[in-house]
Image 1 (spheres, helix red, strand yellow):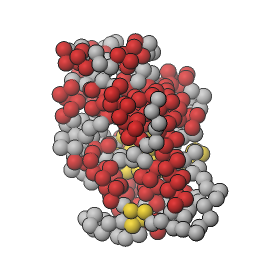
Image 2 (cartoon, one colour):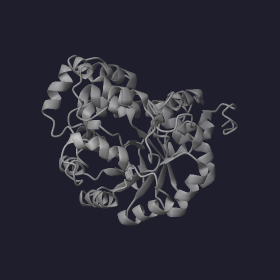
Image 3 (cartoon, helix red, strand yellow):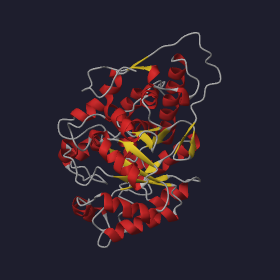
Length: 389
């Protein structure tokens, strides 16, 4: 077993182990993938201020996200098709998150269903909702999440229509994979993945198949999902969804200060500054670039979380020092899951926590609450959005 010291170690194993269409699903963006690349490279532009002769003892990475105590303010983001990266992937990721002490967010487009994940875990998890044209299905889906004891609803706002993702289209992405000559040739090299997948509880979308009239198997699913994302979603519909849930609500996909203000007006508990990992509007600014303008717009009126581009504990620290109260990892935990299953997700979390703790110490801080812009050196050339810390 190789020694895992950073997230890229997991990524290399993941690429070797998982079929190409599912690797590409995670490791790609829309159109030219400019925003996908910027999400990471813009983090790299931010420098850290080293401090010395400071008492580094007694450090803690613990915090809170929407009132929940967490081992570190890092949630597992909702990622569709997680159960295709690894057999029973959502269950394994949820278990790892529960044991580690961070939130797990189950995607609407998961392979394991809400009920299957709830049965396999002992603590509440979060549920991410895509809004669909079929309002009865959405109402029942919210009811299922309530019945399963989910402690927060994460409503994704930035997928009213699907961004054009060239790799997914060319690969013929599906769950389970369609057995074309190209797919079969690739699957033949991923025998370990295939053997595990034979024993999976499920290999299609568990929150949809069997829960929608006329959808009894995967062959009928593609056409349904292609026409179901709701282009008419507006703030009025968001308010109705929040009313139906009547609990903690996190609004994900905020990338503009005006939209952040709307979320505050609606009474959301938190927003997630996110561009869907660069998989929707290519050419949009990175999430970390937009964090400061959004923080300036909403101040302390709402919890502000950040998603997209985080691959290390240093990225987490930079986001927190910029003012975020929580962060999310998607690809970073998927690399671990695809590489080593539940153990790989735990390893990814351990790597990020270790990097966060060490970086905090070398910046001269002992508590996450003490982090601020004084810990950072921020470029002046980011379209005038940022000033030096």
